[in-house]
Length: 400
Image 1 (cartoon, rainbow, N blue to C red):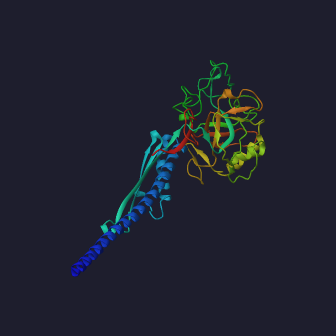
Image 2 (cartoon, helix red, strand yellow):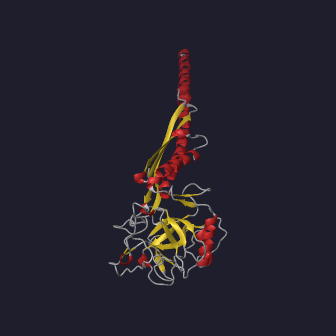
Image 3 (cartoon, one colour):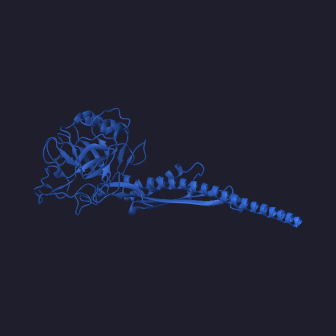
């Protein structure tokens, strides 16, 4: 009996060792799998960040360029950001990035592929695992806020029916003056409306000699007291400057710096620096009382010094610069527009904006001259798109 019991105990010990060995193998396998799985999840998270950054960068081209010109820079920016934002542990080559540009939707889709080495899964004959991530971003129209807006606001374009020679543009010796109480004579509708007259439309487009959707059209963004164009300033004593709030901060390297909101110094600083306070459409802002000739000239001069050789290339239809990529010069700025009926009396008053525009600052020879610019289309906005929002404001957002 005792010998038999001892034999049974020895048998049980042997079985226990076998079970422990098998359990350890399973536990080690599960641990190895957990380590490799965690490593792969980390790699995929890094790839997702890369895909997100690349898609957003690609979509930004639909803000900087017209749709028909945006495909190549969108693809280039997406690839550049994908390569620049790849994880040091998982370096990405151009062949591992698939980019799809959808110009009709203002959308860029990026898929990033990579192959990861395993550590413990090799014992199961799995040395490499494919990992991928995908993202899509779009430049959606309808933003209601802008950042780095300059303290200049222009009346949106209208038609003065009784003083127009048929080309829908002010020419000598016409004398345009907006009269909202005479709709049969004066007509205005913002971009995005039915039969719009505003900037960014084909209201004045001549297929033989003009600017599709106004892109590249010369315009005045700061009226002068002796300007030759009566449509520049809707009333006497308002020449487009307005008071910007300063709830955030100004950033930039312009030598003009200032605290506060009111007066010539803050106004000048807001021209050549970036006021990061968000500016909202359909919110009333105070206008400056006076021409602000000197501060405007000083601020614009400093702005132009940041990229002195930038110029509008009539052939390529882009802003060229020796320091910056096409259409990325700091002289390309954001300004606001307003319904011309919004400001119909002289002096200091409130003003609501209905759109933001992107323009290239071309010239202001002296402080007595108007500031000339070229219309560059859509401006970048912040926040979620809304309806109605700014028809010329695009918000870049991830959609996949």
